[in-house]
Each structure stands twice: as C-alpha cells, then as structure tokens.
Image (cartoon, rainbow, N blue to C red; front, side):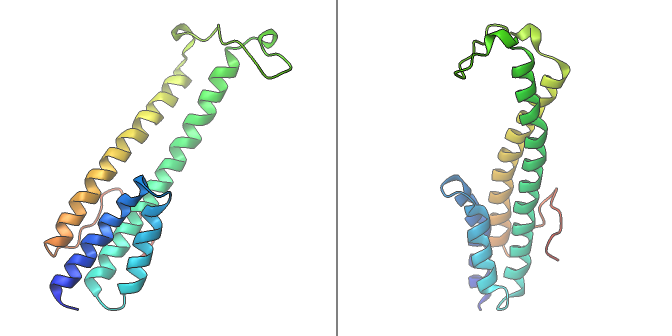
Amino acid sequence: MTPNNEKNIATFLHLSALTQYVIPFGNYIFPIIIWSAKKNESEFVDVNGKNALNFQLSMFMYTIVLCLIAIPIFIYTIFKNIPNHDIHLNGDFIIDHLSTGNITGLTILGIIAVLLFCFLKVIEFILIIYAAVKASNGEAYKYPLSIPFFK
C-alpha cells in the first residue's frame, strides 16, 4: 500500500467508530471489519486499528461500570420513597413522595455517574476526531484511558 492510502484507511478506521450514533454497536463492527481486512497489509493500519478497538472496548467497560452504579441506585431511590399502600395490584403507583428533599447521598452518587457518562461520551467523540486527524497526518495516536486489550 502507498503511505497515503495507509493514512486514509487509518483515518477512516478511526472515524468508523462514529457510526455508533447511527447503527448500534457500529463503533465495534466497522473498525473490526476494516482492521481485520487491512492489518496484514500495513503496520500503520494495524497499530491504529488496535488503538481504536482498545479505546472502544475501554469505553464500553467504563459505561458498564457506570450503569452498574447508577441504575440500581435510581431504582432503590424510587422504590424507597414510595409507600407500600401507593403500589396497587394493577401496577399503577402514585409518586407523590418523590421530592428533592428525599435525595440522599446515594442518589447524588447516581447523578454523578450519569454526568460522568455524558462527559465520557463527549470526550470520546472529541478523541475520535483527534485520532482521525493524527492518522491523516501519518501519526499513530494512542488514546488516553485506553486499556490495552489488543497488543
């Protein structure tokens, strides 16, 4: 491959992770397809593919951890503040007792986890664009906070 072609493929490999906003799990599917097709032809594409996939898998792990923190906290908070007599047999319940006065430190931890998730998604978007620019300039970019699953 020509060096210019390698740069274009590596750039497209990084940018293909943005398909997550259109296609579920596109941020894994398309980089894997591109990387596996071209990794034997170019060392530059191989390094960029590993970096992109390591970053996407790391973001997935961070998201799972944040969900494991936030979701049970919110479920606990909602059901803790609803008296038993407000839950009817048909599944309808009245949420009159939920107020800002009932927010505990545990709920604040859940809110922080949700805000951290939003922050991670914004940072992920910015880092993908930055890595694509670096790849188009011929530089291999190592994402921060990336766990090296592929070496």
